Image (cartoon, rainbow, N blue to C red; front, side):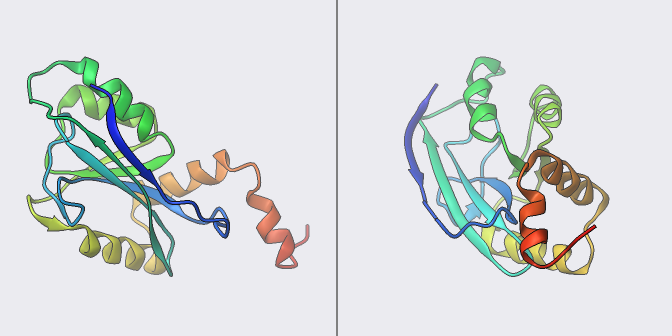
Length: 157
């Protein structure tokens, strides 16, 4: 099953400090979907001060049938995310997500996305948990321009 509709927000002011996180959602308000059969994912960019909607990708009706062929496009679409929040996630999908450096996070059905974003921002301000610290390090490793911001702020060796 491929993406049926995709909305991408373009922001010329993005400075590379945003961590991308995804939410399995049918209504763009709550986390209410199983990863494998999710109808849509909302992807946000988050840093300690801000959270921005970056993208919404919708898929057609998907069933929880154990067919892993439907995961490939979702995994590719989530590339670059540090986490995906969902109601549940099968063992095979968990393994595939972790290989890509994406932490699956199980939350209660109906958890509000805004609440998760606030919690994530608070965690970034107060000191990240082990998985989030690891995700931040991997993102810094993947960002070839990560030192440009430091240099513009007057950092030197």
